[in-house]
Image (cartoon, rainbow, N blue to C red; front, top):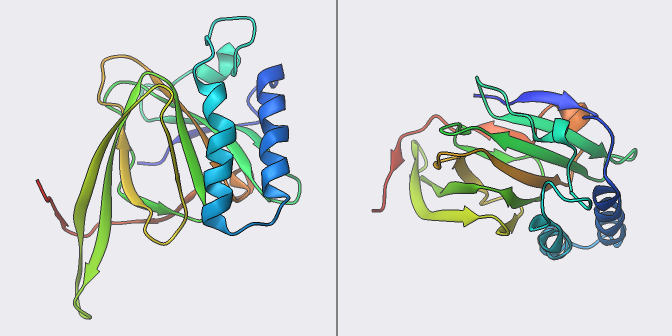
Length: 193
């Protein structure tokens, strides 16, 4: 399942504009992907728990709208040089991604609701491959995850009964690529539990 997408969703709030400036300062340092993701996550975290309906909201009402058929991607910002993108993902109850990895480093922070993530590793014997579940993480509002390929294989879902919204920062131009997903995995998945 791919997200429905909205590019250039509405205008940016003052808080989002400030966050983009903070992200730009980190990305412009030219650090390794893992460190960049970690530092961007540190900048994102304080913005996540702001009252979504308050005067200093992170997103506009239009950027919080979901899609009844699949999770919705609102591309909020993409740097002109392709250095990073900021996306709001809106998940109605039960919506999920396929098992996938990413084209670049990624930071995801839960802004509203709760997301569930199942992480996998790829195991190969040289002829065949399978996915092995390594971890299940429940992410309430305020939770941040930062990672860089390889080893970033996961499935994300909204397993609660209300809308979930997360803010994602990718080290690529998602408005040009259309998605942050590098590969969708349709291999057998072994569960560790």
